[in-house]
Amino acid sequence: MSDVIPYAREDAGSPPSLFPDYGSTVARSPREPLIRVPQTLTEVTGPSGWDQLMGPALADLTTQHKSPPLGQRIIVTGRVLDEAGRPVPYTVMEIWQANAAGRYIHSKDNWDAPLDPHFTGAGRVVTDAEGRYRFITIRPGAYPWGNHKNAWRPAHIHLSLLGPAFATRLVTQLYFPDDPLIEIDPIANAVPMPYRQRMVCRFDIGVTEPNWALGYVFDVVLKGRNQTPFEEGQHDH
Ligand SMILES: [Fe+2]
Image (cartoon, rainbow, N blue to C red; front, top):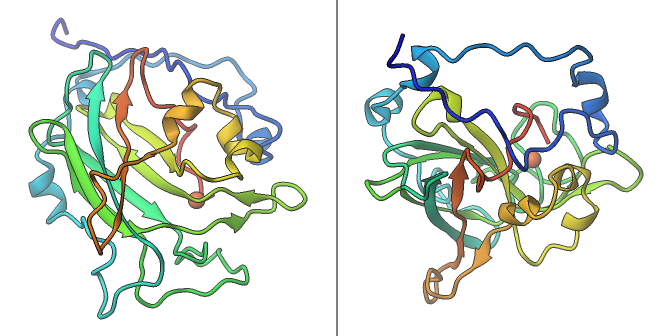
């Protein structure tokens, strides 16, 4: 199939599948040599037409219930680019996060922090023709995760981006620039420098809206030398 053009496989900056300080990677990382599976038309051409596939965007996580959620309202915006700096238009970004107290609506999240009846913590947006996206949410809280003694995840927002094809899918986390937990977090530290820094958003007074919400900028690069670090599949932390 001469028209199948593979995407880059080199994931510079990706965390290794085995990172012992991040305990669950010890059990789940492969022990055998990896088998390279050729990319076929299915992996390199789609899907597309997200507006039809997924229904309307959920770009405001603070208006999904009768009342606004508790917490610091924030705007997150940026661009999705490919390795050549070209915008990735009309691609879906899925968003999930804990509430302001650091608790997820998830049956296995039962630590001693309150659920917020006005916050679900899930959204999705589609980039525009220039690869731009924007969503509104509340800043999530830190939470304990039992990986080691006194282990707390830094505040973070989980993001999944498909990009132009299945082969370019990126699952990553957004961190905040003033968070002292990042430097002692094994998940963040599994990503080598300088790539780790690309997972930290930037406060922007221009994006900030007066009397309403703080603004942060987070650009995402899919594949290639400048990529945002990939995670080894989705996880529940
Ligand atoms: Fe998480």
